Amino acid sequence: VDLILSPEEKEELSSSVIGKCWGRALIKKGNLELVYQDFRAQMFEPFGSPKVMECHNEKIAKDADDSFIQNAADTWVEMFRDKDSWPDVIFMFVLYDNVGHGRDGLFFTHLEHFMSKIPPSWNGTLLLADRFWSAIGVTHRSYHKYHLYLEEINEMVHALNDTRVRWLDGMGISREMVMYSEYGPDGIGASQHFHGFCDVPYLEDMGQNNTMRVCGNVTEILGQLLLSHALGTKKQFDLEKLEEPKDEALEYCHACPLALTPFKLVAYPEVTCSEGKLHPRNDDEVYSFKAKQKICPQWCLEHEVDEVIPSQSDMINIRRCKVDLADVTTSSIESASAAKVKSQVTPAKDKPTKPIMHTFFESVVGGCCGMSQEQHEQLLKAWKESWEARGWETMILTAQDARKHKDFGTLEKKLISLEINEYNRRCYWRWLAMVEAGGGWISDYDVFPLELTAELGAEMGKNGTFKAFDNHVPSLIHASSNEWDRVIHLMMDLLPNKRADDTVISDMYSLLEVSKSSSKNSIVWSYRVKTSINYTKGSDSLSLDCSKYSKQLAIHFSHHLCKRAASAQVFPLANVTIDEAVARRAEAALLLMDDYRNCQAF
Image 1 (cartoon, helix red, strand yellow):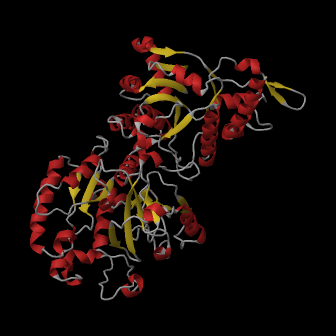
Image 2 (cartoon, rainbow, N blue to C red):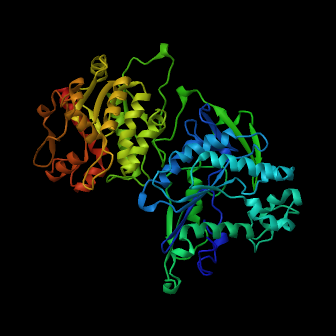
Image 3 (cartoon, rainbow, N blue to C red):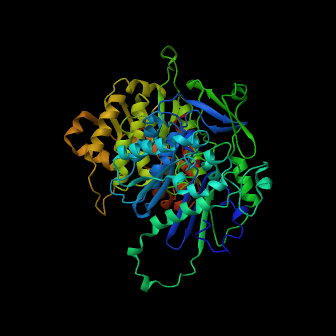
């Protein structure tokens, strides 16, 4: 950041959000974009680890069904979601503390997972280094291991067999800085690990005595290296035709918590953006992050401390608390970032007698499809209330459920290669989530029950055949887990290898292709979901035409239905525009549910 900004633009760098960021920061200037994400590979759990809630002091760092390594993988997928904005160069720290013991299993387990998600056609450079970019883990006490370190690193990078990957030997680059070492010759690498700004005495900035103060020599080398990879070689420039740089406006975005703890790693974060020179962090930015912090529950605070690590400002007590999956609550419907999901996992002898109606929700940052994040959550709440009022249990599935499926990575890689947007990729994910949930019923969360009571649902669900009740529109479906798996693989097989410019790809169109194939006879197709609103206009009000709702299992409050009803002025909410009708579906659906119950009363 220091290298690319003018003196005026970076005047407030040290007091800005960008100046000390434990989250996501982004700087845009002209055609150059720099993105920073706090990654911390040392926090990653081994794959397959038991689900635990992790608390850092009194705050929740990780919900029980969350995973640092999975969130990191999601962030990696986010990086490559848009081919037009693929990075030219990536610098990533990886965990390597196993010098002298041969091939490091954790190094490969983590790195190979990320490598598998890099599009084959990406022609950028991936620069790797250990987490201090210095071999610090081996040099503090055993300088003689440095050469062994280099040999092992070279062997492991070679084993990756990818010419786009290179390892940065930070210690080698900084060997001339031995006189700045904090611990003497054997601790040369330590002189690279600093947090203070050069114009602030280290004693004042860190609250520590007898520490060194390094003003970015090594960091500047790294910055120049990254910029040179992004901008290209001298051969790519016609030096005679270079013009004076234009006065490009600076834009910067951030999602930077106030402190390292609780550590968070979130894909698609909600960022705040500004233009012009950097400004000091203001009160709004301070309090917005304070409001999002969640407090560790008392039962976990009473748990024995698993690990204590130092930070700049405090000692961090880390507690990793195992949670009974029957009581796990993940991200909440009331939360600003995701849906609250209560696990329905119970011992076989205690299985509920009520059938379960599933839905799938994974938020898109900032909302989507004509609705804000809050409006999506209101619709989820209305969906839950309505189905439970008809006797059902409800369960909200998320991306965490979908990722359990062994073919999630294969499907996601295919969808990304076809440039499918976030919303439509999530629609495919729900199919995998239903396989992992054990099959059963699912509806869109804008589908509300009419005649489909829990009793009728239990009876209709005795047969595990794949049953689509809105024909090829996957708004209401019942199938066994095996059938869910069979049909999603049919859909995957029918995906094109290349997307034509005018081709719409979604799970609805994929299911339509299945309906046209030879597999059609093994699926029960029907039209039992109502796709219109039927009110009769009175002099000053609307009354529901009850006769139009008989023999319909449910009603789908789709975008199309809401727009059509608002245009015809038969939408349950009076005096709304077409856009408002879409956004306020939760209110409208609950009103129609009340009117439908009145129909049944007569």
